[in-house]
Image (cartoon, rainbow, N blue to C red; front, side):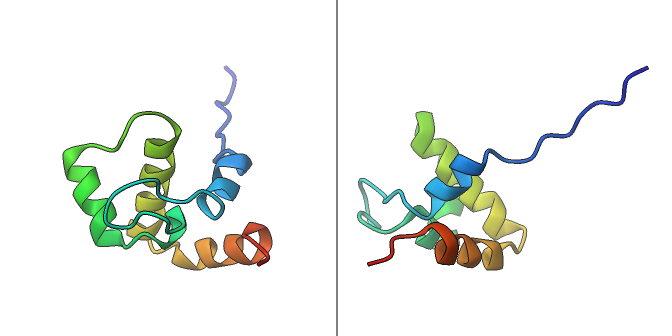
Amino acid sequence: METPQIQGPDPELLKDLVRVRMPFGKHKGKLIADIPEAYLLWFNSKGFPPGKLGMLMSTCYEMKLNGMDNMLYELKQMFGDKK
């Protein structure tokens, strides 16, 4: 019997967390990684938007919920805008 392979998150998705900006709402223009957890919690209860934006927001929510803020910080240092 084969052991199932556990796959990690898509590296491009993680990079997009620190590159893509929120296109609407209260936090329009903020990086997805910088959206406050409370706002993401609200979306979690109401439903994330469809498509890639919803996937990014959901991933960010899960990371913040599980205390992985430091990983978001490191991703910003490695892949964020160098402005």
